[in-house]
Image 1 (tube, rainbow, N blue to C red):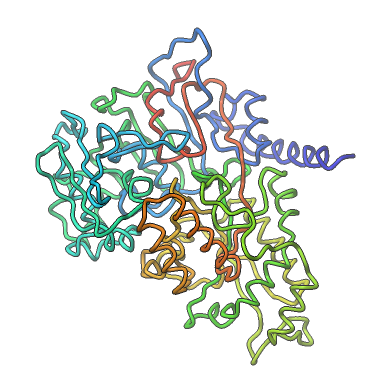
Image 2: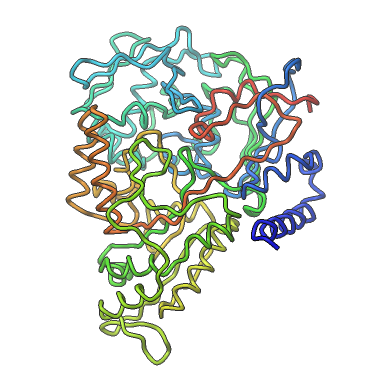
Length: 546
């Protein structure tokens, strides 16, 4: 029997179990068998009743009905400037448009703005023209004041207490956001800021007339964050049943015209046999060490030889084959392969080499004791690994990592927590030893949010507390020029350093497939518009109108 046949048998067995577990649910009964297996064979049942491919020739779109989108992670917030996770962004993007949106090929298009902005010759000033007669769902006009207010939450010192993960970058690079008239927004940067349009012009615009009277601390806790009373996107908020589902309804006053669907439901499912998350430029799963010297991780992982040894000890191709059914690739770099700045072979490449891993730990002074666990200066190489419960791929990965590291004298214990708690650990509390997570890149190769030292502050994405002066300078230089060739060279240097330092080793890039119901038509999925960027969602329809 071939390996492919073996993997297929495993896949069918898991899928049969999934159907058995969920056969009593109405939404699973309506799935066609072909659509269901197509979904699972990619290692990702991302939609249960959701956006299938384009319309069949001759079919006339119908108004009415609903779709249910499945995800194993609940959302954390519905405030676009507080959100730090894909699950929340996925729902927020249907209720709140930004200035721009993204097509499936990565091209930027106008959303609340008519088109991409005009940019001054020095690259410091972006002038956006808003669409005429924009309105909030309560009938109030949407103007440049709402844009000014939204960006102020992440860069204006007045709102320094707002827990926005965007503050680290925007407070440094945004000088001002002004409005010469209600339909014009002028954003001035402190210097050339190359990732601005690709990474920071898509944030959902929030209503100043609802939130503008609140203090910074009140913004963090307002009821609006869990139940927005007004929106500007294709769908309005109806209900969030925490841990179960979020229900949205059509916004008839949407600027692009009413959606065809009556209702959209984001369903929280028990595990990733049902659904897995994706990333805009190809899903990545990586683990990060806590490098804070005040924490246990700082004592265990401060020496890069330890970090490198742990990566050499992993048979990552086996993980791709066994856990993801071959739908992925071993990661050689911190940049995804779909990025124009990807370097296929950075300075250090990590193949599976158990003997080398053990030799490196021996040389670094981590010696095996009578219990088989390595120790140095009285401290055992023993730690916890956290990931989100329900993600069966990641749960399996932790099991593989645990055994692989046990084989070289490392005691690593998996710990499963709920996804909102995992995000809180990464961006706020940071009491973990090591975490395993997937991460969502934007269309720009800038990775300062994850690896620049300024983003180690509470609320930032650099929860590993990685600080490297050379990396900081390269990342700063790379966003200070619009010359693509110069930027690419700098990102190649960045990838070389990260391959040596491995503060957050990337295990693989997942190429999972979206599963869909044959009753759903009109979607236009691509690698860059899977989540918040869904300009096609208003045109999705269901053949049965239910």
